Amino acid sequence: MPLYDMPLSQVTGEVLTSLVADEVREDRQIEYKEELPATSPRDKMEFLGDVSAFANTIGGDVVYGVREKRDDNGQQTGIPEEICGLEGVNLDALTLRLDSILRDGLDPRLPPIQYQVVPVAENRTVVILRVPRSWRSPHMIRNEGWFYGRSSAGKFRMDVLQLREAFLQSELTLERARGFRHDRLDSIERGDTPVPLPEGPKIALHIVPLTAFDARASVDVHRVAEDPTRMMPIFGQEIGWGHRYNFDGFLTFRPGTEHPVSRTYTQLFRTGAIEATTTSFFDPAQRVIYARAYEPEIVRAVERYLNLETMLGVGPPLVVMLSLVGVRGYTMWLPPDYDYPSHGGIERDTLVAPEQLVEELSAPPAQILRRSFDAVWNACGYPRSLNYDENGEWKPRQS
Image (cartoon, rainbow, N blue to C red; front, side, top):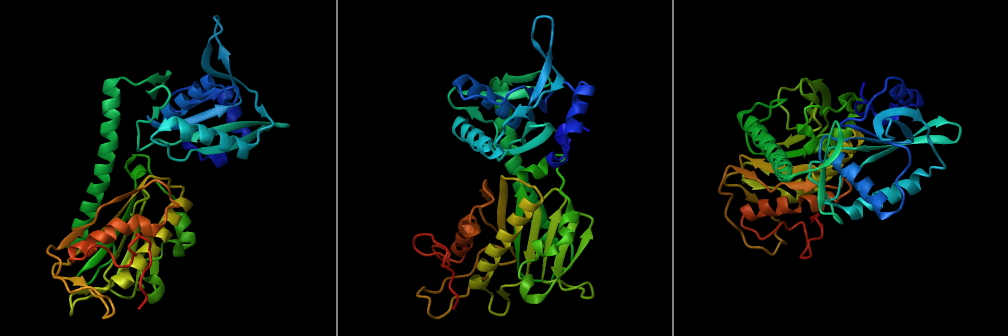
C-alpha cells in the first residue's frame, strides 16, 4: 500500500523500513529528507516549495529522517538508503515553527497539514508531514512569486498553461458543490428522499467538503454508527429520532421505522457530504416561517455537523449551503413586540441562499450562516435577520 493511502496513525518503523527494503522511489506523493528544514531563507524557500507542490497537485508526504542513495556523481537518486532518524524532536515546537513558515510564506493559506512522529530507534524518530491536496490551489510562494507543482520526478515551477488549469480546477470544484446542492434540491422537490417527507415547505442544509469531489473521497460511516448522536437530525432532541445504514452512507431521521413519514432527516454520504432536511418551523395555515425557532436550531445543527466532519477526519474547506423549498407566499412570523411593519410573502418557490466557504472548522456557526439567514429575511421584505443585532452579533430573541 502506498504510504499516502495509509492513515498516519498506522505508520510504524517497520512500514518505513519496508520503504528502504522495497526501494520505494520518490514520486508524486512522497519526498525524502535527511534533515528537518533549517532556519535560513534558502531552507525556508525549499520547504515552502516542497509543501506547496504537493498541495497544488494531489497531496503527499514529506518524510524527514531518511537518507537517499546517491549516484556516481554524488546526486541524490530519490531511492531511500537508510532510515537514519532525527534526534531531539520536539513535535509541538516543530509544528509551531513550520506552521508559521507556511502561514507567512504561502498565498492563499494552506489547509491544515498533519504531523506524525514515528520512533525508529532509541532516541531517534522520523517526522512525516502529510500535505492534503488543496482545493484553493494554486498556492504561491510570496517572496519568490512562483507556483510549484509535482510530478514523478519531483517539484517543478508551473508555467502559464499549468497555472491556468490549476485556477480553472479550483473554480470547477466550487461549481460542483453548487451542482450537488441543486441536484439534491431537485430530489427533495420530487420527493426522492431517504425517508418520505410530508407535503409542504422544507428547509435543506447542505455541508459539502470540497474533498468530496476527489474520486478517492470516503469516510468511515461505521464511526458514526458507534455514536449516532453526533449526527442527530434537526430538531431531533425535541421529537425523538432513529438511525440506520443506507445505500448512500448513514441516516438519522424522525420518527422510528414504524412510521411511514418523517419530519426531519440527516444523511451522511460516503464522500463526507451532509444533507439535513426538515419540515418543521412552518405554519401552513398562516403561511409563516418561525425564524426565532429555526435559525437557532440550524446554528446548533451546523456546529454539530462540523464537529462530526472533524471526527471523521474531513478537513476544510467546506461549503455550507442553506435552502428553503416550497415557500412561495410564506413570510416571517414576528411577535407583537417586534417594531417592524408587515411585509409581503416570498415571491418564489425555492430560496437558494448564498453559500459560505468555511476554511476553519472552529468558525462560529452563527457567523457562517449570517449571509444565508439575511437572504431569507430579505426575500420576506426585511433588511436583515432580526436574530442579529445592528453590529452583526448573534442575539436570537427568545420571546
